[in-house]
Length: 159
Length: 106
Image (cartoon, rainbow over all chains, first blue to last red):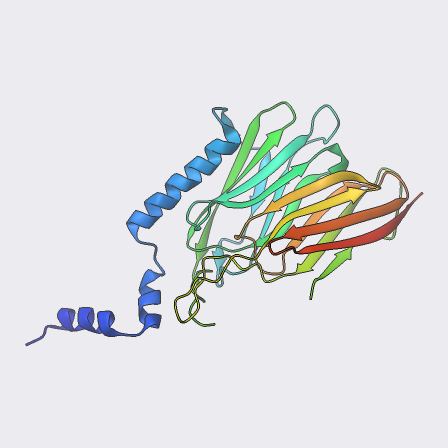
């Protein structure tokens, strides 16, 4: 006699690609750990050993997203944007996307305001981080937690 | 197919901060997706966006596969002098699109 649990396991194993993909929607712990390591590595490449302080950066993302394929993201950095004191670069990273980098912006006093709006893909519910490098070499950051109900990587196999 | 749209004010006061919105038509294929047969679809993305004001680079973005299809980039610049603002998108498979807009500064 097959128990309900056994039946479900069998059914899941034998079912179509689609079902397998649905299970994959939640990243398995090993992969999550790998991606987190990649995220830390990417962060270290930009920041080095410098200290990253919170503040001055404002990262805006909707807290809850239906579709991770196109998520509005905007970053603003508080800065006078003069030749002596401006933002040199802005980097955006994700913790659980297959690649941690999202965008890297290079700018200067000619930008007027230090900011950018774009649309990004998010693979899972996760934390997104923006880091700004100022002309004096200091780093500032902000993070936003996003809940994603439909991952950006789920549409594969539908083509 | 290579197309891009740019919106910015036609004229501005000297020293004014103007907002520029750009949109490029591009699938931004991540390189992580597979076809139904399980073959990996090769990456095809826009890697870099550069904005130059009268030949001087004022804003540059490096894009990664995490940027959504048809990348929208909205940013600001200071209207310093009349002239042309050029936008360039460079990507995989020799993708390169240039768009220019003229601005009158009083």
